[in-house]
Each structure stands twice: as C-alpha cells, then as structure tokens.
Image (tube, rainbow, N blue to C red; front, top):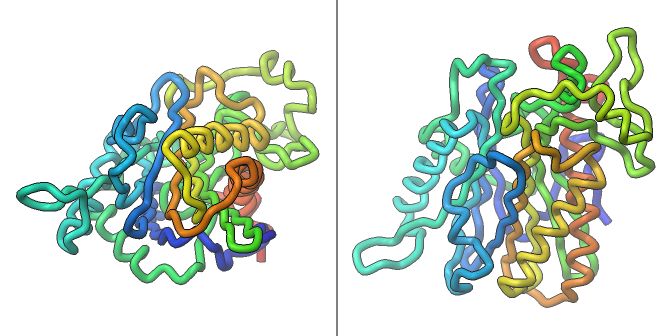
Length: 326
C-alpha cells in the first residue's frame, strides 16, 4: 500500500494527470484531472446545493460509450464553473473531445466548493485558470502538491461550532496498489464537520478558544454545539480513479463507496449543510473484482481527506496542521 501522509510525494493516479492553478493571494484555485483516452466516469452528488456542471452525462441511465476527457474541481462557488470553459478550450485546441460531425466536443464535468470566507468573494477562478491548470497537468510526473493548493487553497473544516473555531482544510491524495490494480483518490476538504483519524479521534476541526477539541467521540455533541453556516457553503469533493475496467453500474457503486469513505473521515458527514460530490473514473487498463476495488476506494478516500488537512497550512489567521510538516 502507498499512503501519502507527511510530505508531498509520488502518487499513482491510474494514468490520470493532475494539475493545479493556485491564487494564494486570493485563497482560491482550481484543480484539473486530465483523463487518458477511453476513460469512463460516474458521479454521486449529495447535499442540498451541489454546484456542478455536466453531471447529468454521468448518470447511470446514460449510454456507456462516452469518454470523459477531464474533471474539474474548483473554488469560487458557481462562478468557478467558468474554469471548465478554459479546460474545454485547452482540449479542443488539441483535438480532444467527443466526436461530432463538425468538431470534437470535450466532456468536462466540474464541481465547486464555496471558499469565500477567506477572500470575501473578491476573486474567483476563471477560464484562464482552468487553462493554466491543464498546462500543469500536462507535465504531471506523479508528484502532487497537497494542502493549500488548487481547489483546496481556501477551504475550511470544523465550521459546525462557528467560524471562530474552524481550521484550515485542503487538497489531499492517497493511493493503493494491489498487484496490477491501482485505486487512487483526491479530495477537496471543505466540510462543516471535523476530520477524524481511523481511531475516531479528531485530527482537525472545531477547536476551543483555550485549546482542545470542542467535540468528543459522542456524535450528539455536534448537535448540542451546532452553529453551522448556510447550506451549500460546505462541500467535500472526491475523485476516485482506478485502472480496473468497470461497467457503468459498477462505477456508480464505486461512487457510493467513495461517500462511505467520506463518512469514515468526516464527523458528522452528509449533513443538510454539506453538498458532497464523488466522481469515479476507470481508465480500463486491467481487470479486478469490484468488491476489491470498492474496499480499496473506502480506504483511499478517507486517507485522502485526512491528507488534505495534514498538509493544510495556516491562512488568514485560520490555523492549519501543515505548519508542523517539514
């Protein structure tokens, strides 16, 4: 197994290339996943107000013969969906897209996080940012920056107790290989809840003004102290990729398992204040049991979420765990 925890390093993302565009001065950014030819995808969007684009194409009742050419995760709330225009332009210039009688049309699903709390909405990623993120993905060599990068630049966690108690979220990745089978996950962690370790102890989240965690292992504590922001301002975005060939229905089940990974690492998860979205990609290079793939996905999603906060550094006076990583 390969879990990235303490430092940015190599990640096997099943042939998918990752690129960030980060605007550190505005605490926002976007992340692009460029897919190899033949990649298929599915999605499971939950929550009251998921911000998204082209998700209907990935529904289980749609034809299986359409490739997906890129996935975009971005800050900027619904304004950030403009980044997908830049990704489409980048791909179209290279002749990449679904064939039509006139010209190829790139299939680029996208999802957003609401990250206005640090920049007051002063700037949102745009088409130029999406284009630049594609350029970064073209040079992807397996090294992935985590924490305050790309779509994870301005995200926050532990908002259930009020803004004065929250901590910095971030972008994280994790990957597992079993023989020839790879399952990898990337997460943008912007949850209303806390992020917890495998033993259920709090890793990052709502902190007391005098130190310590406001929550203990009794989940009812979250209800007692809950002072959440508006619905739709909290989202965990996940992309799971595998090189195992999966059918559309199997991909749909994989997205459900990705949400199980969210539930393991985020407490509480899938509340009425969260708009969580999980994508699943298959690059169709090998074969493996769907049960094995699902089990691996739960592990990598939960670990990618934890890595997102482990690498998140303090920003705009919001504390991050990543300050202690050398």
